[in-house]
Amino acid sequence: MHGYAAAIDLNLKVSDHWLWAGKGKTIPWKNRMPREIVDILERHGFIWGGKRCHYDTMHFEYRAGLPGK
Image (cartoon, rainbow, N blue to C red; front, side, top):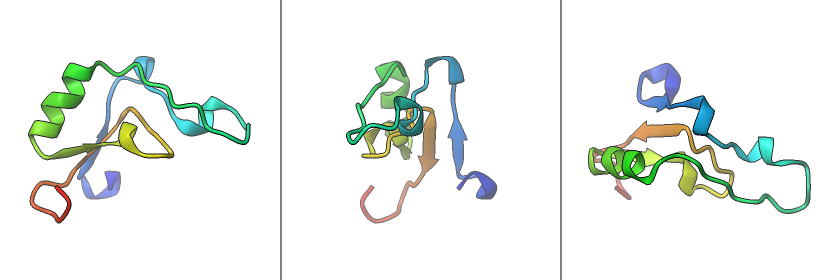
């Protein structure tokens, strides 16, 4: 989605990604992205990567108007 200019990554200093969490059998979910930022972007049609099983808390995709949004 980044290649189509429909996704952005924000603030690497406070982001977490499932691959960075380790190579164990379970993936411990982590998040340091401020909830206020997530809420604002979601109100404007973005989907947050922190809500995925394979989380990517810096990732936001614009999906307004698509099914499921």
